[in-house]
Length: 555
Length: 74
Ligand SMILES: Cc1cc2nc3c(=O)[nH]c(=O)nc-3n(C[C@H](O)[C@H](O)[C@H](O)COP(=O)(O)OP(=O)(O)OC[C@H]3O[C@@H](n4cnc5c(N)ncnc54)[C@H](O)[C@@H]3O)c2cc1C
Image (tube, rainbow over all chains, first blue to last red; front, side):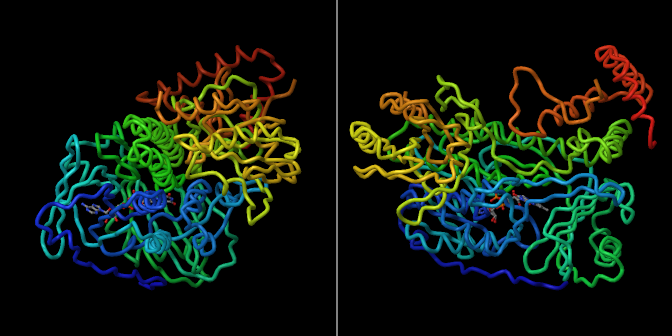
């Protein structure tokens, strides 16, 4: 088959740890250099935790896997300093179209309004994403990645975790305070620890084909139910960089995967879809079945499970890697506080609670999509086809068409880390929500609100004229920055500037004010992972401190 | 009154954060109602469901519009 990308092979290097007379101890070890483990390692290193990553392979993802990366995942990767090349290389898209028997019945725009730094979605081959993550890891001094290091045993002790690692030059032991398990859907570590991930299989098969072609199709997601070239089933067409297109054919459960993935059987399907005259080269094909499952809890003592190791979804909705990256985002700041002695270990249980809640939402949405795409019974198919037929004329039916609900951030509204609202607010910026971005202007290169939050607790203080702020209030903001868990205040103003070292940004178009339903004095407390954790109509120092304590399990 | 054909699924007291969530929740419940039923049982359940909903709506003007739409383009 034709190849547009050649996987680099990274070198196995012998580590001095392998020759040490006693077991070498590390503060933090990550098992697995997939997209999720690498994200976690970069975040940890950026937050000052020395981190060691072990991977049994010596290369990035082989062939075609994840394609679509969501706004939220990219916002996180942007905070980690690696979204720029991804967005530059990726194909940006917002529009999805759904066809029924070759007729366009529905169209959606995932980012209908302007004023966000990061696009709704990009498409990018998983191997590129991983290469950019490796590039970022190389820049971090307190991060080490060991290829061809396969973890073969894990013992989860009360005080530390011990590991056995197999390398091309034999085995060696390691120990660590904390272990992040990111070793993928078939997580061997889950097995070593006698844990399981449970859920359901879907009885359907999908042929994934990546083809290279110069085509005039727009960068949109095209999902087809019952197209003339693939009767009774569905297909998906999506553009990736390098003139590669992802084609996805629903095959049905009876299909023989070995037969179906033979190029001589794939090519006629592709030709039927793209038209006789379209020239293409097949770059990759494989046949998948999908399942949804998760572990009961994501924290087991000193072992913290993230990504596919913790939960797995069917790919309709691109909720796999995207949700794993959000696991990392939720975990690392908590781990940093625990490791620094600034929060109790039970803060890590909130990682499990919050991300189990998110995993359930992802599993629910991807199960609903899969059930719509693959109806399980005659009556289910009748309803599905009735929705599609009605969708030609009836808007309500269009809204019911479920060809995949694309990955979005979970509102962690149930989390005990939130401070319950005491004031009235309109809009969606509830405690537990991911902050909405907005364009702002600063005295330097600041352009986006989201760039100012993250990595630490941040207080957004809204006011029309920053110059009118009482100096005593500025002193109170100053005091917050000297708290044991510091809170940095950012004044979001319509105009003016404040002094005493408190940063002021100008919300010239009033977009931030609108998105946060703000009036003079409105204050939002953001967690280091850019989630809102408390908000008030006025500023009160003690309430802010108490909300920080609640958000860090310090009360 | 005319038949509501814009998306209208909601649940008093519950806030849905995504536009698709309430409709998807209904659809899931509908399919779930049919779980493990034979075709004959499903047809009967559908008939009962239509009768229950029709009585709830009550307004014959609305019901006639729905009946007409349901029958067209089969
Ligand atoms: C066809 C398809 C399409 C998809 N599309 C999308 C999409 O569009 N968007 C999306 O977000 N997701 C998508 N996904 C899902 C996505 O690929 C996964 O969710 C993602 O790869 C999970 O990342 P991870 O880091 O958790 O695990 P993995 O990527 O599986 O990485 C696990 C790593 O652990 C290493 N490892 C395993 N065992 C050991 C061991 N014992 N010792 C050391 N290392 C070990 C492996 O070598 C590997 O590098 C898709 C998946 C498929 C199959």
